[in-house]
Amino acid sequence: MNAVQLPRSIVDELIRLVQASPQEEICGLMSRDRHGFWKCYPVPNRAADRKHCFTLDAKTQIDAMRTMRHHGEELAAIYHSHPNSPPFPSPADIAQHEYPGVLYLIISLSARGKPTLRGFHIHEQTVEEIAIDPEEAASR
Ligand SMILES: [Zn+2]
Figure 1: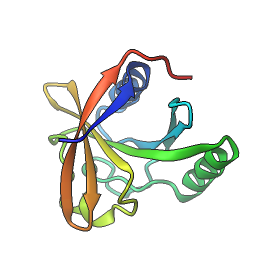
Figure 2 (figure 1 turned 180 degrees about the vertical axis):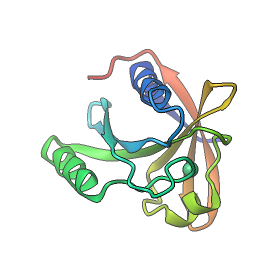
Figure 3 (figure 1 turned 135 degrees about the horizontal axis):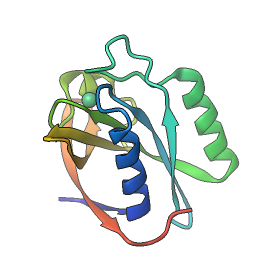
Figure 4 (figure 1 turned 45 degrees about the vertical axis):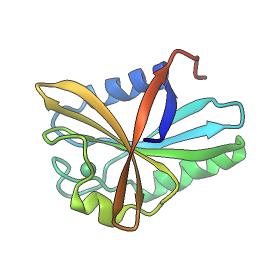
């Protein structure tokens, strides 16, 4: 299995965001710069059914991508939460995914509220799990 190292601080930040919204899916983007610094860009969820789906708010997404370019960062991951289902891409997640090379992170609270983080690459309809290896390196 391929693996990606995520700074522990970014994982903790994600878990805080997810736990602050235990009923509805949260979503957002993550960037990485050439020094390996990761940054989290939370994006409002505009889906009609936020308990089971997410739709990135278009304007916030465009603004975040512009900020990344401006700072020499690249889009490294798209994350969202699953309040009530396991951390695996749903059929809708797979159908909607538009960035094949970008890490797809899902944080689930379905295991009695204990956060579980899993990563994937999605190509066409194929889902490949990517191991997440939290490292202690600092993020900015
Ligand atoms: Zn999902």
